Image 1 (tube, rainbow, N blue to C red):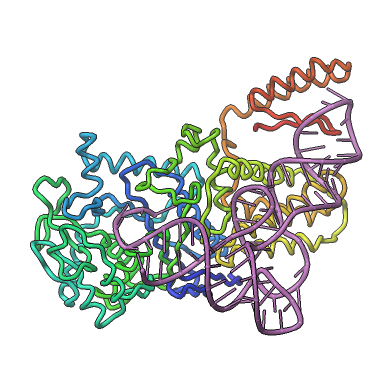
Image 2: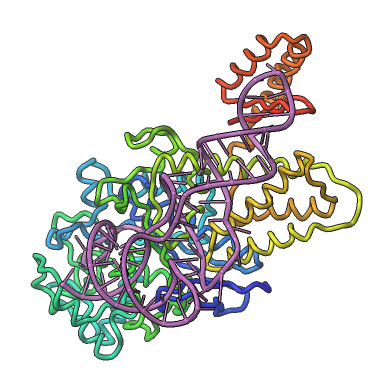
Length: 491
RNA sequence: GGUACCGUGGCCGAGUGGUUAGGCAGCGGUCUGCAAAACCGUCUACAGCAGUUCGAAUCUGCUCGGUACCUCCA
């Protein structure tokens, strides 16, 4: 726990030294998905970013409670006066129960996240399971005078709040500017000010998902769930709150306002925001209709895809960019990532079988690389820099393998710690399908075939040996002839 | 219109007041029966203009271009 961790705090827009509230412990809350559609490439970004954060903290010995919610109620559809939420609308279309929809997409989200090798959160609360907590939150805000009732709905009183506190601390927006520039939407007549946001919404009769409350039969507002659930599981004050940059305003600004209005504390010490994935320079998003789902990526079934890309390739692709930069999708970039990843994975395999020379000497370079990698990761999760240093280690492995460099047993241990431990434990990069049950059978068969090929080669029957190589290639098995015989790997 | 951010070599993508990012692709070589892989060497940069400075891709100003948020969104 010697290492200092720096994180860019969206509150100050600066890199800050991370100091936990409780020594050696981290409370992390991340905004999860709204489960009304298949998870897409955009979802992979925060999934992987905060996974690295959690893994890094744990690697350094911190105890982390990682809370990521599932939003299964509460997000209103575009036009406010319809008063229906997304889950309910989709349910009517597909003739399914709202909770059935939520369940389908929750499971598909989980499956995709597992394929991307992200660790599950410690707690994954659902908004629908925390209606009571949200009602309590709203009641507190009402009691403190920062909300009002109108037609059975409760709205947050931004102007009243802004007299005592500051609405806009996170987003840098000014109330005056917001007032001058708010678009006039329909159905705003219940509100005192167009900036005010719903804490509780009275449900229209045809609305499916609704709950009893002191004010009406209805449902909680857009931002209530995160304030209620983060406080429940992490306390009134906790370390880190993460999410996509698109949530910064209004969602996170409103969370801060709700937290402050109900408990007098803004609640969060460090706000982290990951940037967007773009396609042709434009944000990839559900509402823009230009998104590619994760399953389409894994299967190659999307017209924009030249072919399928494995989950680990996607993970590597995302790690090659810093989380605060936009990342542009393209087939060329994914194919480059795929090759780079393969190179890394090969080195991780090869490092275990390197031959060593006797002696106690230690190659200082290896220790230096180890330090550089960890420094980069602790410097606001700079995964691209970490990877670039890991590739220096890959070079060492290849040079040793090639015989142009010699290392001692000590070096080998250090090199293995560096490549295998950091890649698998912190970056979550590892060989896919490594636990295949039929692996032993495949090993035996391929080795047998390669023995036959060896005989052909010995007899200079290259037609046969090349045929074997080509056929194996077609099956996805790559042959490398080395001085010590043929090696093979599954592509 | 308001508020932020960005513009890097063939592509992706870091970094930063003076020193090689890295990956992919390209080129030359080593190795090989041939290939693949690997290794060695090598090429192509910091939108434009002006300023600060001994020195700027990095700081400042302006211009041009782009993006995000302001409405659900990772």
